[in-house]
Length: 299
Image (cartoon, rainbow, N blue to C red):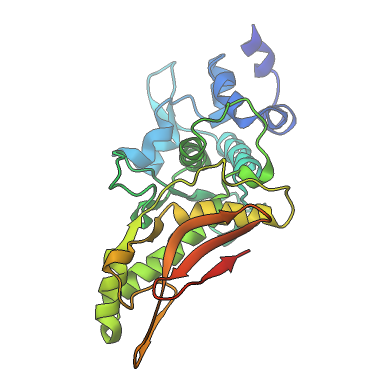
């Protein structure tokens, strides 16, 4: 049986020399082949380990499995968990643009900032409609395992590219870059806090906040390029517009996200807009002055 063959191999060989040559989505099928295959992928035979962040189970509960011989719960070997974590961190680097972290010699998963990045992810809203943003800044969270983090990034990816063939090759510029989404969430969170707390400009803050439109997953068919320097711009656009997708100009006077001013009979208000793409070259208009004919170009 396949499980007998894999039982003879060290898990480090399976995770670093076999599974890494397969697509991450294929690991989900591989783990179902046998109990030992499941342990190789997840470092545990507990099938409920991945729901720790969505249930009442603690992180310690997620790191325990059932011993079938005596029915007791015993801590898993650290090396099994470490190999599984390394495997899913590799997936986060390959699939969602995270950076390789420095080697962590002490074996702890969450103790340094380089390694800590892998555990930050974003939950997708359970109910989606026209009033629901694609993502919310309040849904950023720290996952208990690298697999749990990867699972949420995969859900975001599949929502944005819902019409894409799952088996198709994904060009670099069309991939979801997790760190960009986390930076965008941090950026929008600061804007939200400014709008709520800045006493000197409270009226402007309220105007900006009330005018912001719910985030949308940008149409991937509009975001194409020949690669190179524009790949990063495309990925960044997906991240920024997932939280807010523009401003409602009907309620604006001076509360443009990109600035507004008033002097004598002159008014200016540069509102944040859903992107408009120019066909002659890769240029994206992301703001427009509602009082004057013009806009700014995002390259």
